[in-house]
Length: 331
Image (cartoon, rainbow, N blue to C red; front, side, top):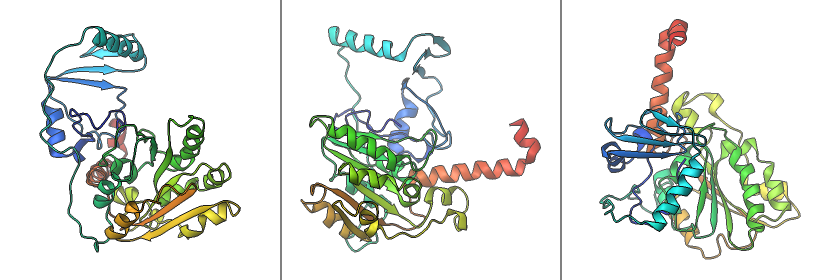
C-alpha cells in the first residue's frame, strides 16, 4: 500500500515490505529496528503476506491512524493529520542532526535474462523502470500487478496507486478514467495515465475503454495476459476451470469500443527482447492516443512475493478446512 508514498531517489529509500515475500535485506532491516512508525497502516492478508509481517518484539511501535494515534499500548484520540502537520512544522523550525542509516542493499530484485527468453514477470517489473518518467500517474491492479510494481523503481515525480485491502479486481481499469481526466485538468502538472492490469481483472470493467477513447484520455495500458486468474490459481485451483477467462482479441479492443477514435496496439509481446525493443522505441507512450500493450506470460508466473503469499493463504485455507466447522467456529 505504501508504494509511491516515498521519493525512491532519496538515499534512505530501503525498499518495500510485504511480509514473507520481502527481499531478505529489507525484511531483516524492519525486523531489527528499535522503533517502527506506521502511517495509515491497515494490515490485510495481501499487504502483509498472509500476516507474516514481523517487527522486533522490543521495538517501540507508533501507529498513526485517521482518528487516533497509538504509542505502544496507549491510544490517544488525536488525528494523524494534525500530528503529521505539527511534526513537519517542528522539524522545519528545529531541524535535528541525526545520521541516517546507510542502505547497503539494493532495494530492487535483480535477475538475468536473455533477449530470446520467454517473457517472465521477474524481467517485466525491473524493465518497466526505464519506461516511467516524472509526471506519470500509475494505477496497479489488484493481484500480480500490485505486487510486481513494488519491484519497479519509480523516478521522482511519479504517483502510483494500488489497493490491497479489499482486493477488488477490476477497479484499476475504471480508475484510470478518473486519473486521465484529472491529468487533463492539472494544467500540465501531471502527464501520462498508465494502467497495469491483468486480463482477468480487466474483463470486469473493460467497457471503461469506451470512456477513455471518447474523452481522449490517452492512457498507456499494459495488459498481463496469463490465461486466467493467476493469483487465484496460486491460492486455490492451479488447474481449475473457474480460474480461466474468456479469450479476447486485444488488438481489436480500440476499434471495438471506439471505432471513431485513434488507438494503437502493441503485441502480443512474448519475449524479453520484444519488450525491451518496445520500451526503447521513442514513439511508444508519446503518440497522443490510447496505447495498449499485450504481454503474454505463463499462467503460473508471478512475483516471488505473490508466490509466497499465495502459498501462505493456501496453507491457511487447508488448515481451516481440516479443522472442520467446530474449528472454524472457535477460531
